[in-house]
Amino acid sequence: MLLPIKPVCKTNKVRKDGTSIVSIQYCLDSEKRTLLNTGIAIPPKFWHKKRLFISDEMPTSFGDANQLNEKLKYLIRRAEDIVSLAVRKKIEDPILFLNNFFAQDIDIPRIETKLREEEQKTSLANPRLNLNVNFQIDDYIKSKSQKVSPGMLGIYRNMKDHLQAFEEHRKKEYLKGFNEFQKKQDVRESEEYQKLTITFESFDLDFYESFIDYLSYNHIHRRRKDVIYGLKVNTIGKTIKQLRIFLRNRMRKKIIPPIDLEDFKITEEEVDAIYLPWHEINKIYRVNLSRFPHLIDYRNLFVLGCLTGLRFSDFSTLQPNDVRNGMIHKKQGKSDGWVVIPLRKEALDLFKNEFRNQIPILTSTEFNRHIKTLGKLAGISELIKFSYKKGNKDIIEIKPKHDWITSHTCRRSFCTNEFLAGTPVELIMKISGHKSLKDFYKYIRITPEEAGQKIKELWQQRGEMEMFGRLKKKAS
Image: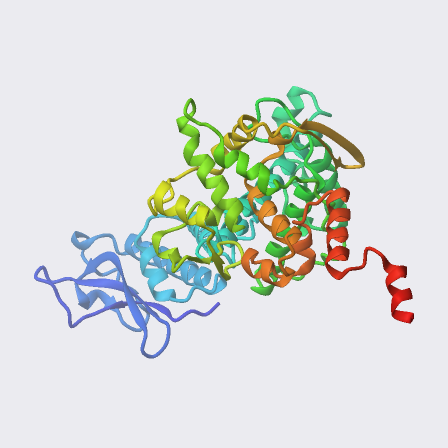
C-alpha cells in the first residue's frame, strides 16, 4: 500500500549544535499533515534530499550512518503500519491516532488489543452498541425513571430478575450432567453452555415455553423464609407483558432487529380477592388501638384509602396542595392521569386532623402486614376460600378474611361499595382512573347473594316485583 509517508530533514532549522532533526512526514491531504520525531539528529549537509537517507560520509561522532538509516527504515515501517491500521479500523482522525501510538513503544498487536478494549468500553456505555440483554433492560428502566411511578420501575426490575434467575437455573441444570473436574475444565467455555446465556436471539417459541415452565414450577420466591416454588398465573403474565413491551421498545428504537412475539401469550386468570363493605371498614375505623398505638397511622391510612379509591402509591403520598376545597386533585403515578375525588367528612378529618396535612412515610410491606392485624383486631375473621393456578395445578387456600386484606383492598372496596350503592360506573371510573370497563369490572367483588339483592332492590325501585299482575292491570 502506497502511503504518503517519507523521511524529511529541515535543513533550514539548525539547532545550536549544528544538527537538524530527521522527522517522518505523513500527509493525510494537502492541508492535513504531521511530523513525527525520530530522535535522530544530523548535520543537514549529510542528508541526501533525493534518496532520503543519511550519507555514509557523516562523521561517526554524530552516530553510525548505517545504523541510523536502519532505525529510520524501521520507524517508517512502523508509521506505515499504524496508518494502515487506522485505515482498516476506519479511525476518524488518522493523524491523531498516528501521533498517539507512534510515540508509544508498543507493537501493532498490542495497539489492536488496546483498540478492542476501548471499543468494548464504548459499547458498554452506548445503548446502540451494547446488545447485552441486562444492559438494555437497565437502559430501558433508566429511560422510564422520570415517566412512571416507583412501583412500575419495581415491576420492570422483577421482569429482569425473572430472566436472570431463569438463565442461572438453565446453567445449573446443564452442569448437573458433568462431574466437578469437567466443570472446572472447559464445560463453561463450551458452545452449548454459552448458548444458555440469554441474548436477543434467544427470544423464540422454545424460549417462551421453557420460560413459562420455569416460572410456573421452578422459580424460587425471593426474600421468603420458607422456600416457595412457582409463580401465580397472573404474575407470570405480568412478566411476559413487560418483556414484550421492553422488546418492542428496543425494536422501535432500532437497537435490535424485529422479533416475532406473536407466540408470547400473556397468561391471565380471574383473581380471587376480597372487598370490605362499609360496616367492616367502620369496624376497623373504630377499633380500639390504645394498646397498639403504633397501628394508628396504618389504620387511618387504610380507611383513607377505602374512602378515596386511590392506589397505595397515590394515597400514601398525598400532599397539602393535593387537597383543595374538599376535593383531592391528584395525578396518578401509574396511569399518569389526573383524578378529582370528593372527600367525605371522615376522609377530610383524617387528612386534616389526624395526619395534619402530612402523610407519614410508610412502606407498602409494613402497611400490608399491619392492616391484616387491624382486620384481626376488628374481628373480620370469616373463613374465605380462594383458588388459583400454578401451571396446570389448582391451588386452594382457606384463610380468615383479615389475612386476605392488602393495600389493594382499599381500592377494590371503594369501587365495589360505590357500585353496590348505585353510583354510575362512568363516574366511579373517573375517580378510580380506570380506562376500560373490562379493567374496572375486575375490581368489582360481590357475592352471588349481593348480586341477587342488588337486582331485587332495582326491581323494587321500578315496581316490578309483581310483573304479570302489573301487565294484567295495564291490559285492562
